[in-house]
Every structure is written in C-alpha cells, then in structure tokens.
Length: 267
Image 1 (tube, rainbow, N blue to C red):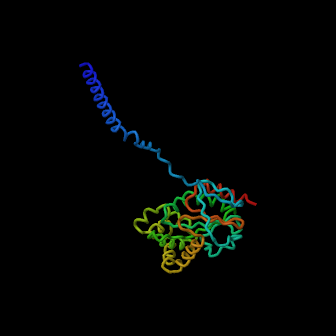
Image 2: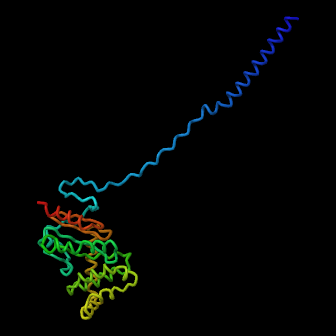
C-alpha cells in the first residue's frame, strides 16, 4: 500500500508543476509584446526658423560699410555709373536741387500715393536740403515712379511737375504728402494743390496738366527707374566716384546721414 501512496504523491507534484509551468508560460506570453515594443520618441523641441542675415554679404572690398538698417539691392547689369551729375540724362532742372558738381548725386524714385514715400520725404527731405544739398555736398534729383496699383499717383505727379515749372515744387510736394490720405480717398489732387498756390499759379498749373507735355517726362523717369531695376518705392540711387548704390525702402535721417558721410569720406 505504501508504494501506491508514494506514487500518487509524485503524480500530484507532477500535475502541480505542469499547472505552474502553463501559468508562467501564459504570463510570459502576455508581457512579451510589451518587452519588444519600440519606445515612443520623446517629442522634440520646436526648432526656430532660420533667420535671414541682418545684412547682405558682399565680397566687394571697395563698397563702404552699409548700416544694418539699410537694405542694399545691387542689381545685376546696372547701367554704367555716371562719373558726375553731368553724365546723368533726362534731368528736369525744375526737380533737381543743388550743384551738379557735388561729389554725391541722389536720385529718389518716388510715388506721391505711396505711404513709405511720404515717410521718407517728411522725415528726411528738409534736413537733407539744409545739411547736404545747400552746401554743395549732394545733388538731389526727384524722379517720378507712379506705381500702377495707385489710382491717383500719376495725376499727382502731373500736378507736382507742373508746379515745378513755376518754381513751386517744394510746397506742392509737401501738400501732396502731408494730405495723402485725403486725396487718396477723394481723388481731389487739384484741391490739395490749390490750397498752397495762388489763383494765378493754379491757372498755369491746370493748363500744364491738361497740355499733355508732362506725361513724357514722367515716362522717362519711370523708364530710367526700370534700368536701375526699381521695383518698389521709394528707391534711392546714390552715385559717388563712379560707383552706383541703389537702396530700396525707407531710411531714417540718421542712417542716411551716416551713409552720406561714408561716401563723402571716400578718396
């Protein structure tokens, strides 16, 4: 009887061991997928977008240092740089100021309906005239560049150029820029100009505007701007010692003064 009891115990142990083995295999199968699961990548911090350089890089050693606030657009295949103001063609003497013998010539391509042109004119023109033009350092040429998107800019250019024929360009330009929002909405360029001229002067201005002789002058300025690759207003083109420097956009007077002094200091 003892051998039968002993064998029964052995069988029970074997059955218990089998049950435990099956249970362990089940648990192992349950956790096996998680052991092989690829860990999720930690979220990466958002990378900042690359920023454009603060100023263009130029390899030309002879170009003066450009202030960071000024954007320089050196167009390929620019027309030959004039050696002096006398080499610049199609200059309306009524819209040019200072001495032709000045070491620096500035051509400002502008649109009377352009807000940026208003800012440039109202913040720099008077000081530029006083500090550089009147003393023979800069020869300043105002160029018309009416943009097609502005409905009344060409009309304004006609009136300003007509007033220039009478020696009244400065008060008319000031009136047009300072009241830009008014005539931009109403289209009443004539009324704005009439507010700063006498009745006799307005009679002459209106005759010139209707005479059809002003548009060819405006078109010449526009065509010249295209040779300089002007594609926005204001654009100022500086000429000094046989070099040409076109600048697009607004410059504060401090930046303009800094650059002019650099040009004037060149030998």
